[in-house]
Length: 567
Ligand code: GLC
Image (tube, helix red, strand yellow):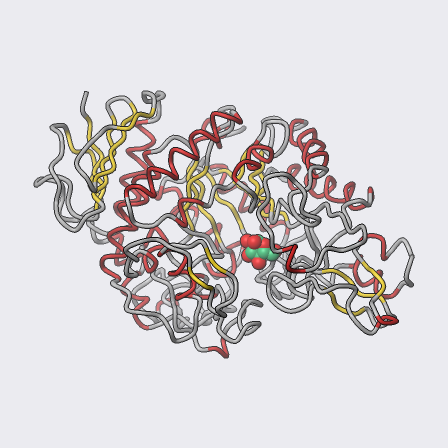
């Protein structure tokens, strides 16, 4: 029987979804890699945290050329991570706790070890096997790539097949792009959607949802023109094509053939004016809004991002999404500890070439992704602000995604030695260290040798990325014993949120206040955030929760959020 929480129509509209990066969550097999039974063993933790669903990053068979986003077989579990039976057990355990399951679907590209791609390489140019991917004849008799397009991970977007043809990969060479004009490809992905839906998954996170359908008609625009992105009109040859919606409309028919209907959330890096197409009830239902993740620690930034997201929702009838971090971005606790740039302005990028629009958060990303150039991070301040920011998200209408470890206030591991880096981004340019710093296995115990594993309770045989000594200070067991910890605050906040939203709270409204304070209400539930370094006065009312350990007796503390009940 479906748990009542998940039986509610469109429960995901206002859900709190916890993102699990399976290889780094918990290792039950004892081989240094997190796995499916590891997740099952931590259902109690997820339940105590109070989340409505988990989203699992890929757990499919993969050579891990891109952390599992290079899928060898879409309808199986990587044997190192478990089996289909163990997957079913995990779903059953999560469902019994009222926690929904969202799996990651990677339709833009398979891995180069997928049976289809092996067959394509073995077959000749013009064959049906090659027609599942995007092979083209190379220039100069096959000696050179067909054009100058670049992969998003650096280097050419084309790799030679060895017979004069080249295949397109917008990401790593191990991730050949599929040909979505081919009906066989479309049918196969619908098969995959049914395969997991039949096993009880509640939803899908669609990787690179703005890719898939491409227009490779010649003449090909040069790389310089391809960089004109995002566009408001669907005119880019590779991204956000109008035809893509036919794919998602047919997926919708699959989703709606289940009871309750399955849903999907698009990772669509598109022009904001185009996001609604992905989030429509006729297509995927929801789309990530990454703006909050890039907002600076400034009330105006938050105000602007919130207004824009809420007006998007009014356009689609979907719900918005809030998130501060994911497996692709530097940890929020470190980002907010970086110095603020007084006036957001346009920077040259690290190579001094393209201008960036960007502000401190973007610069922070550059710093944290850059070897040895990180400035001082004020971590206590960053963690304090991260706690304040998540209470803003939890108080807003819509769905919030929390990345594993952010509930612990875990900082970025910014100084992983180059030789342990796994991310394909690392090293493609001389300066990028890549995204591994937010993917280090979680510390469950403060004792490094708990479980005998030299991995802070992650497993019994090490961790696939090295954990620094200070990881123990952030461990789950330490925070469970401390009522002022970040974990304790998350648990309290989610419990309160569930009760405050059990009957729909009043309409969202901004409330005017002193400079530096962001204040909104939903009926009697007020959320006040102080972005300054000094306490600010607050209205009368019952303090429900305060992000700062010292409490809200003297007003709204510096760099903190207070939830208040006041008529
Ligand atoms: C998405 C994933 C990222 C991956 C890329 C290619 O952006 O979030 O981790 O590298 O797609 O699949």
